[in-house]
Length: 458
Ligand SMILES: *[C@@H]1O[C@H](CO)[C@@H](O)[C@H](O)[C@H]1NC(C)=O
Ligand SMILES: *[C@@H]1O[C@H](CO)[C@@H](O)[C@H](O)[C@H]1NC(C)=O
Ligand SMILES: *[C@@H]1O[C@H](CO)[C@@H](O)[C@H](O)[C@H]1NC(C)=O
Ligand SMILES: *[C@@H]1O[C@H](CO)[C@@H](O)[C@H](O)[C@H]1NC(C)=O
Image: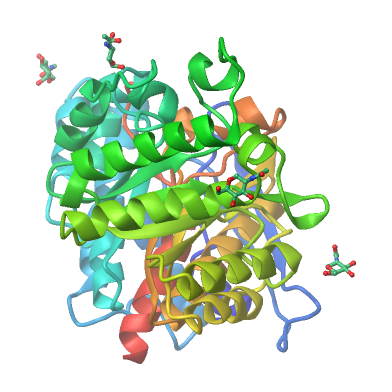
C-alpha cells in the first residue's frame, strides 16, 4: 500500500495522530503531501484535532467520504472495523473520561477492561497474515513498567501481543553475575509475566551488560579460559531455559558499522577472535541436540535490515555456520529506525529474502521508529508509513515469521535515554504519564493496516 492509500484510508486523518504529553491538545491544521517519489501524488488537508478524545470512528467516516477504498472495506471477515472501533473508542472513552468527565466514570476500570477485552488486535492480525505472532520487548521485572497496571494490562492483551522478549533480565550480568553462579530469579519472573505468550530469549553472548568477572577478570583471560566461560554460559542457559524459549538470540551484535561488516572489538573478539561467534553457536547447537530441544537459534543485529556490507557479513556468518554443521535457524533484524531514514519496503523485503534464501527464518526483533522531538504532523505521518513498510515487508516474506516491537509505550521507551532529543517511537503513549491509561497512536493503525492488508490479499 502506498502512502496515498494510508492517507485515503484515514490513517492520517483526524484522531489518528495522538499527541504526546506536553504536545498538542489544541486544534491544528494538517497538510500532508505525498513524497515526490510516489507514483500518484495527492495532498490531504483537514482540520485535525490532536485531542485524544477525538474518536477513531470519526476518522473512518471522514475517510469514507473521500475514497471508495475505505478502511472498513479493506478489513478481513472477522469484522476488524467494528472491533478496531471498539478498541479505539474504548481508549478514547477512557481518555475522554480523564479529561472531561472524570467525575462519573472510573477511568481505571474502563481501561483495564479494554485491555483485556476480546478486541481484534495486532497479534490476531499477524496470525491471520500467516505469522507466528506480533510481540513486544518489555523490561520486567524490577522496573517502573512492571508496576504500572495500565501498561501491564496492555501487555497482557493477547490480541495485541502474542510474544514477549526480555529487554534485559536474561542478559549475562543478570543470569551469571559471578563465574559459574547462575541467578534465574529475574528470568523466571519474566517467564511468569509472559505466560501464554511465546518468548524470544535474549540474549546469550553480547558485548554489553556483562558481569565484572568477564570485563575485569582478576586473572587475564586466555583464548582457552574465555572460550570455556563462554561455552559454560551458553550451555547452561540453553539447558535451563529449554523449550520455554521459542528462540534464543545466541550472539547479539557481533558486527561493526565502521567498517560495515567487520567484527566489532569487544572482550570476546579481542581474546577469542571471530571464532567466539562460532564457539557460541557450537555450544548452543550441541546443547540443543544433546537435550533434543526444539528451541530455535538466532543471530541478532541492527543495520542488517537492508542489503549492504553488514547484512552481507551476517549472511556469510549464516553460511559459515551451516557449512560447519552448526545449527542456526534464524536472523533477527532489529529495525530501530528513524522516521524518514527507514529503508523502503522493497529494500527490506529484498534483504529478508537474501537471508531466507540461505534456509533461515527472519524476525523483525526490535522495531521502533523514533522522531526528533517535538513531533510534527509531518514526522508523525512519516512514522506511520515507516512502521507500515517494515511490517508489510515481513508480511510479504513467508519466512519472516514474526514482528516484535522494542516495547510499546513511549513512557518506557529506551529511546530518549539513548538518543537525547529523540523519542515518540512506540505504538502507545500515556498522556497522563506513568500509571495512567494508554492511548493508541497512529503507527498502531499503520501496523494493523500492513497486517490486515495481507489478510485481504490472501
Ligand atoms: C475506581 O476503581 C478502583 C479500582 O477498582 C477503586 O478502588 C475505586 O474506588 C474506584 N473509584 C470510583 C470513583 O468508583
Ligand atoms: C538474583 O536476581 C534477583 C533479580 O534480579 C535479585 O533480586 C537477587 O538479589 C539476585 N540474587 C543473588 C543471590 O544475587
Ligand atoms: C582461539 O581458539 C580457537 C579454537 O581453538 C581458534 O579457532 C581461534 O583462532 C583462536 N583465537 C585466537 C585469537 O587465537
Ligand atoms: C563493502 O566492502 C567492500 C569490500 O568487501 C569494500 O570495497 C566497500 O568499500 C565496502 N562498502 C562500504 C559501504 O563499506
